[in-house]
Length: 202
Image (tube, rainbow, N blue to C red; front, side):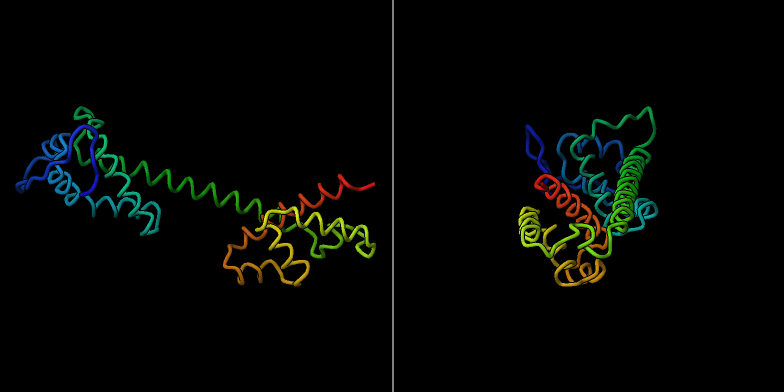
């Protein structure tokens, strides 16, 4: 156990089998590392099963369990015996964190889908969307200057699309980026280009 506690070093002790959960938690509050290990050993598996049932990802479930027990180690005094057993308190902590993880993932997916939907409306032919007359030397220079002003990750996507002739799917495959990320970077880059070209237009 490597977690520290402000004010004193964690103690180590061997908890006898059958020690009540409440007693173990009291010892955790005193910095007893052995009591914490015993509590973790009792409920880690069932906590992981609960988290996995909600998030459906083993790695995420493991992280949730670690975060929940870290909170127990840091703030064992949050347990209120009047509101239920230590086990129910632990399961409630895990459940709450798992639900938060699911909501975060759903929100991120919605944002990615929205960005992808907007980016999909970007014209297939970049020359139509950036400037109508790239044949003219002045406008070509303006576009090159605008490209140079893009963030590197956006400029890379634009150059691959517009000058290497790669599709967004090909860029995603070549770079290892999610397709939604490629589309959102394209959208942001196109907006910057339009803004810049609009500002310098006569």
